[in-house]
Length: 103
Image 1 (cartoon, rainbow, N blue to C red):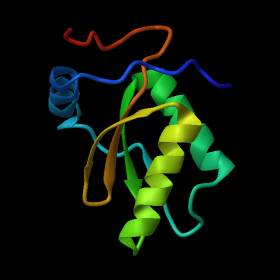
Image 2 (image 1 turned 45 degrees about the vertical axis):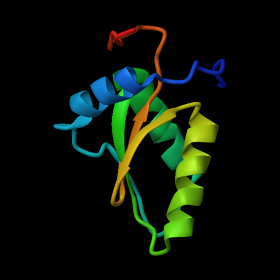
Image 3 (image 1 turned 120 degrees about the horizontal axis):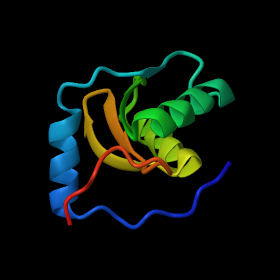
């Protein structure tokens, strides 16, 4: 279920999404097993339902974490809004738009 490529987020849109994500709790955790198909399915479901989610990425090495985050963005067509520590803030517009982005 691949969706069309989204237009890149503007600085003001990223700022807006960061403020909206501030109070969110991570909905998906990536643990020892890494990025599995089940985890990707969960992320896709959460993105379809919420548009803006937090994913907790457990990786010892900085490079491993970056690789996992890049893979998540690529495979879900999500856009990385922010990464703080082990938390990835991910956005993907759904067909049923829930978050109205500023221009």
